Image (tube, rainbow, N blue to C red):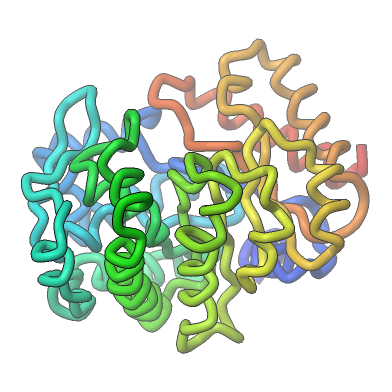
Length: 353
């Protein structure tokens, strides 16, 4: 195995553990997606987004597409954060241009107490099979990241029935019957723990918990309803010692020390946070992932390179940085811009500029 291939196979895992690396590893949230023509072709063959997710052959293909095209340091499983509530029987579907919806939202005690954590080997077998297939197909090229939505984020979608707008239903339950909401979060904590364990057993080498809606909580409510369930998941993982875990709370830059208390190995941060300040707050307890504004990919190449270098300078010297976007890749980004970004990060981090 050449040095380049060997470094690509372990660079991310070393950085997540705050160990020295030859250059800053880079992967991108939503790196498999609509901006790639090969993804659009696979989606057309599948027929719909969820049909693509549920087809291990095609889901494997689109997971690997970006790491074949670019010198990225990780593949992330192509799936959706809402597979767990879908497996609970809520009837997930997608409205073009509006995102995910549930046919049967859960908003009362009868519906919530009737939920059970699904068996990943049965209800989510298509995800497990995809993970195993991707790991075989990668053949050591780079690590595979598995993931799930956080319990709070899943609960928000399940109660609202769609993506958050004013969050009236979930916030109404939070203030009106917090114990009932905690019951739902407990079920989801068990479900996500089992789901992530199944992904690791199938071959995932790192895990990420997407806390998409954590930032809509008050500072008082965030620990109870978002951070603590994530901490229980991390503590409960069967293979915790072997697999690094990344936690990303969108809009959670003010709570980084609290998020470090989850036991995660790394925290994702969005572009509203200074990496230098974030690093000072967490005191070397965790690695940091981020945090280029995805909109910077619309900039002219020279400006894009400068923005990438600015992120690297903001983090500064020393181990524990994974370069990423502050949120997901936008669907109309030019593929050439992604190549420019990756080359800029790799060149600048190798040279120390």
